[in-house]
Image (cartoon, rainbow, N blue to C red; front, side, top):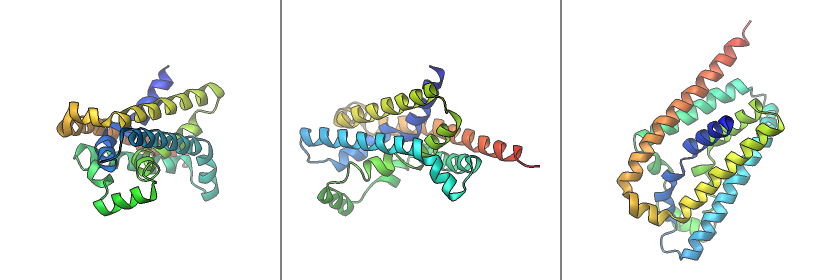
Length: 208
């Protein structure tokens, strides 16, 4: 249970599904309830597939390019921390947003459930590097199962939040979502620094 809570909390903080809500509402503006539900489901499935593939295949990609786990932790820590700073400063939505022309093009291609919703909004560099690191650290069957369950639950919450995005906006309002995102941003910064320090410590232990 402790491992599950750790992985779930880390993934939820990095992915920040609540911060996706205003952008999702903007991207699906004018869509019917059925279309919104379908987009929510497809985006959540895409996120789950991307994260699972990253978890199982990511380490082989690292091996191919000769990237060590220590380097990944340092890079992932920097990415996660920078995302946290963006959340804390209220710039996260702006950085991940789309202008009207790109939004319309995305609708024309019918790909918003994959890009930008799944990549890079929820399954971004932070969450992908986090899962690759987890795969290196947790290798037995029970740990892998726990990780996959945590990923599935976070994706389920993403689906629920996107499906009910209009209600969330009404209840919390832009200011409420912004405030919660800033709190999550602080947690994400701490998580990023933790990974950064773990990578540096691991690298120093390998020195002669």
